[in-house]
Amino acid sequence: YNMKFTLSWLKDHIETNSNLSIISDTLTNIGLEVEHIENKEEEFKNFTVAKIISAEKHSDADRLKVCNVETINGNFQVVCGAPNAKAGMMGVFAPTDSYIPGTKVHLKKSKIRGVESCGMLLSEREIGVSDEHDGIIELKGNHKIGDSASTIYGFDDPVIEINVTPNRPDCLSVRGIARDLTAAGLGTLKELKIKKIKGNFVSD
Image 1: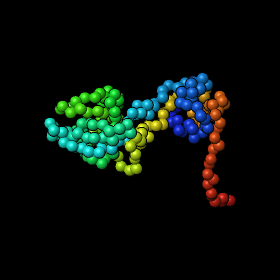
Image 2: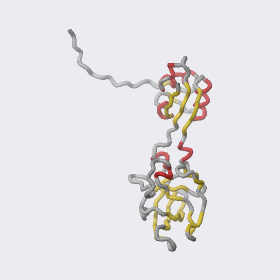
Image 3: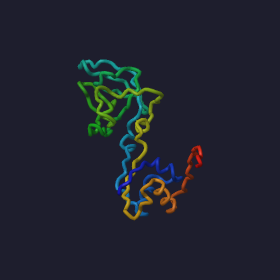
Image 4: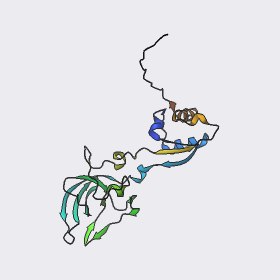
């Protein structure tokens, strides 16, 4: 049997300062072989919230805009073909040399119709959260320049997949896995907080 659970779910049951690597090694050492860890936070580490300061028409292309983009690492010039790109909007910026998961492209500094473009403003398809590609991501709400895109999209919580052998039914629950990890000295088991449910006692 295979079990999948998030790191935060596991930490609902165990108090530990151990990092993901130590938890993974300990799981394997106690007979719960880790088959896969999906950690999109690593993939998203370069993607941050940025603000378009200005968006001017490209001098040599009707459908392109030259955007001045404010990022946590300074301002960059980005040539963008998205129809919704406009001054004042908040989006998701990928710097030069980033890997773009939705298109499987390694982003390089380039010249587009003679204008230098440093980085990219991402669509949902390019970031890998949907098939939407009609425009770049326009973030609503209280976001700050430099905020991590992985946190915004909930990709900062690794998913751990383990193999549970038939003789270990106690580990077919996250609570059981946490109990085994504490027995191995990884931390302490948290107390279960179960709310009491009031009911009516009916006697015959």
